[in-house]
Image (cartoon, rainbow, N blue to C red; front, side):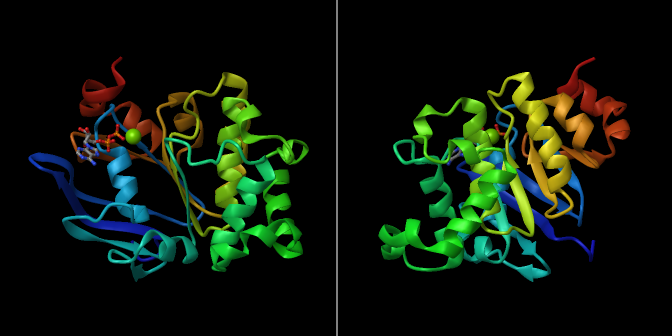
Length: 247
Ligand code: ADP
Ligand code: MG
């Protein structure tokens, strides 16, 4: 556990009577992809919210690079190296692709938002932004309005925004959702390389992607981790089959 980049120690979170996270302890090690799977409503996004700081756990702790960040706001965690992509897109649809990435780069730089009007002229931010776009294969679309992108391209753009933070760990909430098989294949290949730069906690319903990418899988059911293991261990786990995978 000591070499974990990211770690939760017994975090719990309730919404009224609903126990959305129950004593969850998971970790993310250098170079790995740790997938979180489970049925709708199992508490996957709630777990991610607590890791990223949009939700405060009722109990337990979140550690990032060995530091307790449980009481730190989202921004501080992002600056400390936690990158994320959202289940529901956070992109500005009327802005261009490049502007969205520049916004991310500006946020990561820690400079105040009033700099944004000058941001397209800032060479170092531009370089960061263009490099991130090139890496996800969207440089040719830099000047398009974000609304004109295909669904798959928007998900790629979210990854580019996360990359501008030079993350040391990445948390992704269903990045393949709504993508065609071509798009998810491309993204799968990209995440496979990206893991060496920043390990990835990957919430995903696309089981082909999960089974081909994950070093470990944790299965969440009713707010509780019912199993953690390798792909083979999870696929042959009787409780997991019953609760989620079917047969
Ligand atoms: P998943 O991402 O696995 O589909 P969520 O984490 O979104 O699941 O939700 C887990 C449970 O918590 C669901 O029953 C959901 O309705 C509930 N929930 C999530 N967020 C809130 C909230 N802000 N207030 C009340 N209930 C919530
Ligand atoms: Mg969710």
